[in-house]
Length: 631
Image 1 (cartoon, rainbow, N blue to C red):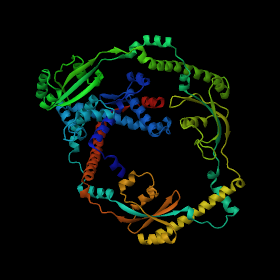
Image 2: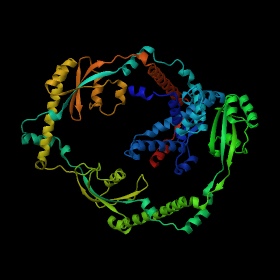
Image 3: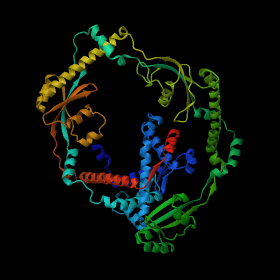
Image 4: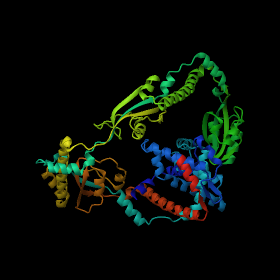
């Protein structure tokens, strides 16, 4: 519950942008490999609408890519598929269709004025004077990977959804009494006293008998078993090395320049001054005044308009109707008034740079790089085929590498984690996961196929030797077993001390006294609250997060203990820091908004579920699973 509260906090702008991204992620681009699906049967039908195969694949591929990025490649595509994320993705897509269908069926509409007022009311788009700032709008929307037209479209859909869900949202709130109690509990800071009991201070006397050691040996065989090791060879096919070996002469460059002149054409650009006015009358008056040659800043000030300079603009910089107007003007002329969701807009073209073709000397360096890339792609393709054919015919990897002047690397011993017997990582970081994933699937003496790495290079792996996992004889590792016995004794002794302190300590003073008698370190932690500890991942003052979290559920004058990486720790509440909610009005308001938003979202989900039951949702499982298995 605490995590949920935290996740729902944040500014209005962040919430709106997040909503935009969630609602539109299924419509973003994906590779041409999926284009052929668009004419096929849908994955799901929702009333009169449907979820196409392309829509689903776009969303599914995006989620897979995001998960792989977040896991830094440690989670494979197959593992992601086993998570069944496809079901959540399809549910979200269906919900979007259900809501849109319901809005259309109810005939809900929203005007440009309503959209404009809504956008201009967003605090993130306002300047220090509380006025809508177009430059801040452009910057924030652009930084979040959106276009002006796309953002306006999403805001229009947001307003339509507000009309649909508005009645549900009204009056939804948690009683103030409960909100206050929860808020106080989350924000109130507590100070804990902690006693560390390190294993290094635990003295172990006596010598274990062989019988005791054999019991440890037999009862913990997995701990003493050495993992499977493999000796592997691998070669790396580096596109850069192939590209660097290619020479392009002047004649080739000249011929390529003539055949590719169209690629070196710089489109026409225009320097544009944009004016935005709150009223159409002011905009029309500004057009007339600008045509008399008056200063643009003076005109903007006189008619209370915002002014923005856009240099070297191309047609795709603007929405369609604005672009058409701007690129039909001559230099120094002014457009008619254009109505938009952000206000009444006019444009003045101050400079036109005509379309032009870059000369040979300007593009020579880039052209040479392009030709090298083109040629290297062909050579790389041919090289991979030769290597593939040679290995298929039974050639040894070391001989193949020598024939094509490629270096081969040999790792004498590696386990499934990428480490040798001393626990040292022995594989290149860029290729470790790829090599391990394949090396431990191959038989001894076998070669992998050509494996494509994420950075554009390729790898071929050969397994030279397999050393199976094995349990050494008792006599071979007796010293290691003795060390394990000593560690167990230290842990037992440390746990006994921790248990005794917890039993005897009924106050912080008593806890401190008991600790000092045993020569243990006492530490008073800095004040923390529950929200801090939900965010905390690393130890706080060398005390594990789990032990501190135990402290929040302790009764007064009670202690608790738990393990640490180096022994045990005992924790007790030292004091509670008085919390004045009246001094945290902003946090309180944000918390109340978050709770209200959570309740509204729950109701909206419930209503959407109801709509789904009445909208005849049909899912084609055969198509769905075929797409998942082949994506």
